[in-house]
Length: 445
Ligand code: EPZ
Image (tube, rainbow, N blue to C red; front, side, top):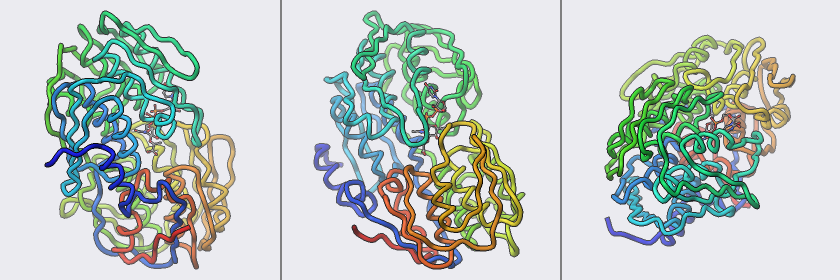
């Protein structure tokens, strides 16, 4: 692997087919009605990869991550890490990146990068733990809700940080280092659990995180930190005990498969009446979805290093769903489930309990003929026998892909605009679907 500077990496990445729409306004055209048949390889999980990349800030030694998806968000975070002084050496042929934070020479995460991706707030805990100070722009709200970071800040204060907010930035300092503490999160937060787990790994003494998130991505981060020398007990449970160490070392870690990508394709197969092997997908990561899809009539079984999905012979059955932290039904699959239920026989009540405004796909699905009524945090979906293609757009990643699912099942052509949302989280989406028989292509502006 030859070290290359990050500018070259970003330039190469920006020109690659899978993420080039980041700077443009490409659209995706789908001619619906084709059954999906074949194999879809599941990529490394974006939401596991992002915190794992940030973990490189905790050590002077090299952390190598493999099975990284090639996505716009990965490039954005690599860019942020590079400006903190991390060397980023991307072996694209093998989907591996080696990160080395020999020295953190800049403790500020600027607005221009943080606003592009909220996960940037994760650098706060690790930089503070390693350097005794950190300044990170507040991410601000986003399309799916206000998304504050108060839990992150309060927990860091409990670890001994002094925190001030000034001109849109979080200024945190801990001149004598962080110390262990017992922290009870008032509700489950994936990002706050990750931030505090990383900070506590280098704090002086023991920390106990109560009501911690236990998503597979949290387990993946805890396993990687353990490889680096962290002392973490209770991995996979809602109580994490972390005994701080003076320094962490490097290591190599393979990112888990993307359960949200797998769940998304499972629903695309169910919507089109197909039969596909999701290669690499893990059943234990999507138990709540499997249960709901079974109720709806979709069959999923472990097979050949992945999950085989076959749609029912007749129509899908309407099923109710409520989003919850893991192991409950993931909010990141709610929009896709709604697209599927639009085609079911009967009604389905879909309740979003994690984010207050995650229904931007509703008016777009309605334009394709879906019958959906919103009542506060719930959507009543009355299934129809068919959807019709239409020009549509969405304002976030999962909403966009729900429109792709609807388009695959609809009669006629659907054009999905603002493909840059999809490029944040789905690697080679149109290629993977086309290889299974979908009539889908990316078109320029
Ligand atoms: C992670 O976001 C994921 N992002 C999201 O995936 C996912 O939807 C979410 O977890 C829930 O599963 C990444 O992993 C990079 P939270 P995160 O903190 O960590 C509120 C996708 O499509 N909250 O668990 O930001 C918050 O507003 C994305 O891939 C506070 O009020 O989510 C939300 O209502 C989108 N204060 C709830 O908690 C805080 O300090 C859960 O958010 C923190 C969170």
